[in-house]
Amino acid sequence: MENNNSKKWFTLIVLILGGGTIYKLSSLKDAFYIPMQQYLHLTHTEIGLAMSVYGIIQTFGYIFSMYISDRFSKKILIPLSLIGVGVTGFYFATFPGFYGILVTFAILALFGEVAYWPVLLKAVRLLGNKDEQGTMFGFLTAGRGVVDTIVAFSALALFSFLGQGARGLRGAIIFYSVITIIVGVISYFLLEDDKILDVDENGNKIGKNKATLHGMMRALKMPEIWVLSFTAFSVYSVYCGLTYFIPFLKDIYAMPVTLVGAYGIMNQYGLKMIGGPIGGLLVDKKVKSAARYLRGAFAVSTIAMLIFIILPHKSMSIYAGMALTLGFGVIVFSMMSVFFVPVEEINVPREISGAAMSIGSLIGYFPAVFAFTLYGSMLDRSPGMQGYRNVFMTMIFFSVLGLVISSILVRMIKNKNRKLTSEQECTA
Figure 1: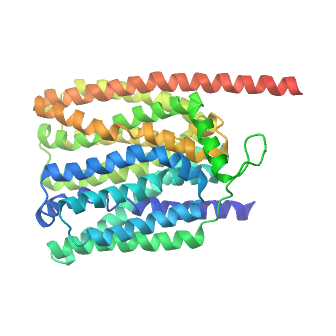
Figure 2: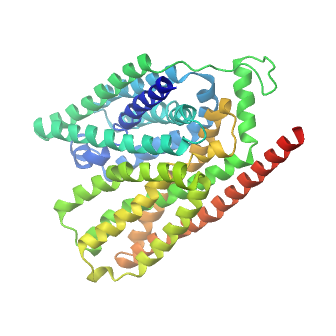
Figure 3: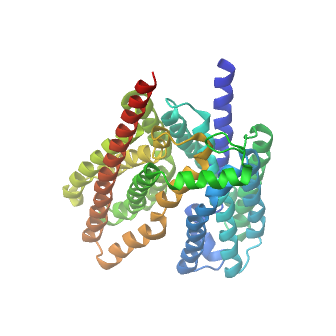
């Protein structure tokens, strides 16, 4: 048992390494937005279009993930995705033209989202038993935050060492590419092969392709998966609003430029390290239900944001503003870390975990297609405090929506457990 436990945590570490490196190229703008404009000759609109191409491929690609993630082993898909992203990065480092960059982001989305993300979620779910899901997903989020931070700062250091020009940007891209490929090779040798089922739920042999398609249909017909997916949708809609705490503190609190970078790193990476374990441990050790935890967290986030809106921000200390916004971010990241954990509570068969995670990702991450445009347009239409108030009220709306949907999910789980208990008693 001790060996199995060590093996489980070792596998999680390997998965964390991949999860913390594979998205560095597709999120190059996070650390190198200005150099991308200068040396790739991109406008704000062109960078936005590249991200839109990525988001479109990501969103609709999850439809294909329902088949891919349960049909092929993680030992193949995870290394292939990592190496594919790394190789694409070498083309990116040639500084292609605008259309070449659009193609680059489309390929990064295919490898990083369609072939990788649902498989990663499935692999983490299958690592732990029912009582460990929160802990597993919580430490996945925290671990990715640690790797994100180390890799991003290393690339920044290399960029600075190479002169902070075109040579530095190319070096940073190649660095990301090499690291991703290395992790892909490591993953191939350290991850175990999955057993791909070739039977239906009644044990009848039907072949791997047919079994996978049959599993997709089973997942699509489970109403609990759809309710769970829209719970994740609500969490992610609130999460998108965290981005606007940065300009809020700069515009309303006059945050010094020297603090903007430090706050941004903490807002995007540091909160993963804090919120991930908090959410995971509370779910497994205290609340004993991710669905109930999400319902409670939605209620807390609604109340917290209502209080935040009415505070006298223009007369408050910048450090008070930073503390309050980061505190709210911890709540949101604790929810982000566990919003797929109820897959275990709704008793999704483990052989269709990939299809379930793909549906959850399709719906859950869909706000990336519209939320940033929605929030940004609010600020453009109403500059100043009124615009930010509109953003925060919209975040409250999504929190209330999540509270309602997660309450439905809790009720569905309760009814399903009651039905299973009744069936077991009748059988006995």
